[in-house]
Image (cartoon, rainbow, N blue to C red; front, side, top):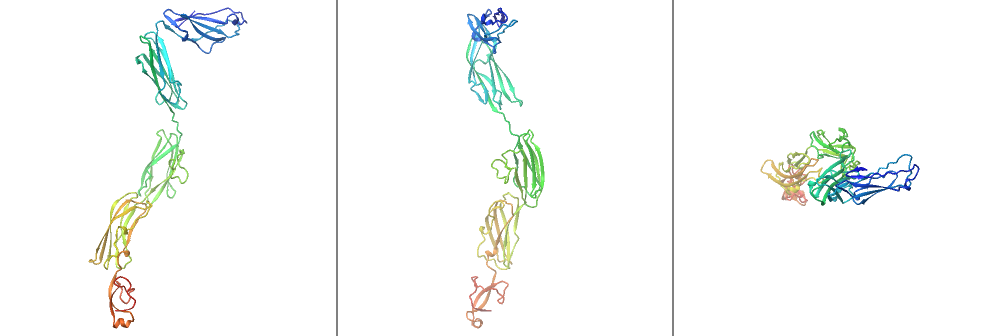
Length: 493
């Protein structure tokens, strides 16, 4: 007789001659399980532990009143050796106090999301029995992530229906080599109240996410790529990538001479930050930056590099511009006219100075007489593209003439709206010869259509014009009062 967990089990033995198949006379053995006083046992609470021992074909538990029959069937044949044979039957089972309390509930896995291997069920019943105030295990749940996945937040269980004071829920987390939670074991213990309980619900929560395992590479960079000013300056560059990714950066000037070279490996911050220095320049120029190393496939690494639809170019340039000038002025081929200097202002590339006033002047030894007025449309501006051209329009052009002065003076005030300074200088010049009359002086002459004698002795007087500085003897042309060549014929003075 063996005593186990508040019940006893009989021991069966019988003699067998060595070399004989004992199944012939003893095909089975009947073990009797008898509960101790005050306890009860139920056949459905018992099951054999697998694998079964040698010589055993099956183990079956059946109810026999308050007792349980455990029928052991031997494998046929089972030959008796020359020594005793001890067959241990291992099983799982338990007894209950005769007046035990039961718990029956549901484990709900519907709130589990993401990629997990277990549980495969959506709802699983659990049950238990025990004496009042006794505590025992009623559920043991394992929630594991699929291969390549983990739980950012450890799986958990919560009693959503029932008395939480009767439950104790504990957790054991299993981690991978990188400290990620890949499995959680949830153990539920129950302390029995005064009466039976049904309908409790334990809800499981878990969300399996893919483990981030990025390729070790450079994924991008950031730097201010607007044009540099003419003076010496510096720019910060950030090279971004996964820890362990190698990078190499070279910066060369327009002549192909390297002005900076450095290489390194991305650390655990994911970014390498440093400063690039650019020298001063007296002319427009540019610098070429070349990034190599463990570059992501999103980089454009072949000519022409830009535009890069998949990411960023591995080769790019930063321009450097000196100040550009915008000026207004006058010109003339007339010997009587002297134009003043061009009014010029210098600006930084890319800026928008806005409204700017310019003043230009000219003098003349004769009166300024305009055939056409100088308007906003008279001043030329640059054509696209912008850049290199500057974006500019003429808002107003005001002309003031003083012919009473000696010499005569001309002053033009121009207001320009400059919205963008390009990469080249520009002067807007108006040619006065297109707007003022030629500088001529009147001359009294005698005219005959037939011969010089008539022109001399019986003339027709006419008022004609020759250019200032000329005489009748060396005049290149004689004009009438309309400015056109005088009529053909003979002229004397």
